[in-house]
Length: 358
Ligand code: PMP
Image (tube, rainbow, N blue to C red; front, top):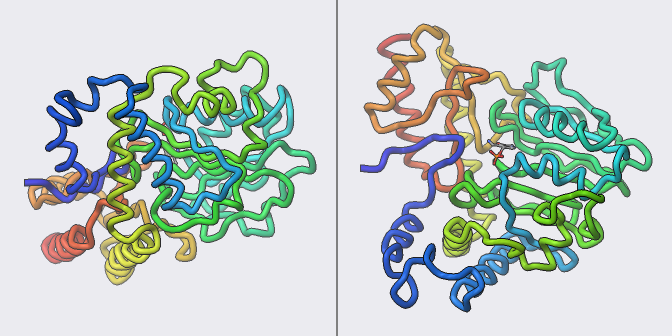
């Protein structure tokens, strides 16, 4: 029996995709699994090409952008971004909205002259800076932000306008949750293990003019131009993760694409926030206009009951609801693979728990 899995990542994957991968696991195309054939063979090349073209369809990626499948997670992109987009010591601007933007800033300081263009610290990272406050420095190589902070549950309700300065986004926990206008971005990156597939593969969408070659000394597997020229096969890629991501893209198209995902995700998030707001036992600290659709952190009025809550939820088939170890409390992640039924079951469980212990 599969539980409703609220993990923040690696997160629940769509059941039909898991089933398809299971059915094809031992014998895929011609007597071997997808993990046992050359990445340069005809069969796998077709997988790679289809994955890219489906992702281009889903996100309506305009011409003039490269789609790369890389390794090392979003964390390696924290370094790859300045190594590719900024000359040594060049100005690079960052927006600080919580844990993951802080990690990106810390890594970038090793490679560039980083300035924090806006910092939501005064709110305890429960809101995002006003659009008008986001002014990159003149001549900055780029402005980096984190559209969805996975731990804080804070999501930008707007795309920053940075004028001529390229906008870079860590979309790890929001990509594919709704349509976006890719043309607003110079570069988008995302680790796979939330809305794309298993961990081990990282999607990078980069405007051609930003993939002209990394700074001297950059390992070639991190150089966007080198990776693009090699069709993301400069070395052996994580073939199973790539294949699986491709199946997820096909599933998303069958389900009606990102407009449909947006409707579902909004309905799921609204149902959970409404239950939290209607109760005096549960609370969510994030300003209403920037509450995440993907990650919903909440606290119990009696934190002494956290362990009991988690144990009883687990027994009811609602798993991985513990908040990030850095902040405690609870967190329900509602990526594309979480059905509305899972959210309804959680809301019902929460109401019952409140009646028994509140
Ligand atoms: N950025 C964000 C927004 C994330 O949620 C995460 C992982 N939870 C990361 C970066 C780090 O990703 P990875 O572990 O793939 O390096």
